[in-house]
Length: 577
Image (cartoon, rainbow, N blue to C red; front, side, top):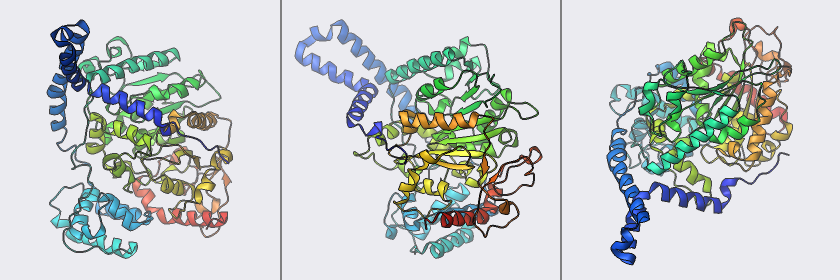
């Protein structure tokens, strides 16, 4: 039985302090005005003329000007549409629709979730068409020519989901990230100053651990605030102008290097305790995403450009012809969204030895939970971590990134894409951003036929984890989103999993039996040992260097029937259903 934990976000006194400090910091202009009137009424002109009062008033005036001159224009400017995603073909739309319906444990809740919890009587056919036009066609309006296809999807959803959608147009409004208003909240100059100081502390800590900083072009210095003076000072320039990164050379012969894709927040500070624990001879590459790091900076590039940039950076350091520099890819929260497009690139996928996915976002991204919780749900008083997540989600650049640079079918990740390498998903049991039960069931069983009592089984996964499974769930009971990084238990789990994956001497077993490779999926599956002789590609079977191409979205959708049948035999063989 894994250890039951108490999440730090549930310590209400910390929540009160967090809210109070950030409210004061981000409303320093208003606080200065209140101070002015209070001092004027209590001490008159002499109180206002005091040096401390003058300092506070000047700071407040600067903050008010910053709000009026920068935030309000920026907020208005960022309401415009983002880059248009690459359109899906009809075949892909059909396959994505089928997969979404297959992995939908409650069709009515699914639909209501995408309509801001509206009543089914208010969700009518025309409302659903409007939502489907966004979800599958990336269109806001003018979808009349696709009406037959949309009607086909709605009819199938009703039949397969056992729900009836009334004709006409109802009062419900769907959630459509690309077209909905971008909800952002002001951040003060004082807040950004604090972020800059934390950035400096992070840089010093990483340099002390042997990292080198690879900057963006010096011409980008004035495009980011707080200013990063290391952009002017450090000599090494990133091979991709859109991203900076930290890199420590790899010298170990017994271990693999690590690549980290971080999540949203204030940068890399939260990862320092774990990064500092990594042996100094293990190479580490940490890509920075400034647009989700509480900064004023340029928006993220398009998905294609961003993934290409990450691939360029990785190839700059891990490019041996024999593939001996394969690495462990660790992704956290937002960083996990990069996995699907990265694994569709042979130049990257062929070098990924293992995957560690922490606080995963891309699994079952078609479910409404992530989008609803980020944009619609009001923070719950009983869940202090909700307020922390809402604070970062409403950061001007973070909110814009999710609203205008987020296309779900670019980032959705299916478990079939993980075949041929070891993967561990570290999931907090109380994750407040995603549907933690659904994701745990999908990873553990391969389906969404879960019940609350299944949590008892998932809680045992930390104690049963061996590092030899092809796909493993590491369930951290009681932890919320991001607490897998912030909580000592979560960091210990991350260190344990990554440490095992870095060992070159450890062998591992495949999740699928030889029968899967031969197309026989009617009998219970038993693991087989991964070996170089497994040269024939198949579901869950290791691939040779000649067949290193990872499964694309098209491949994984086409093989869904095979994988789902495996899930059923897995569940039956465990005696859980």
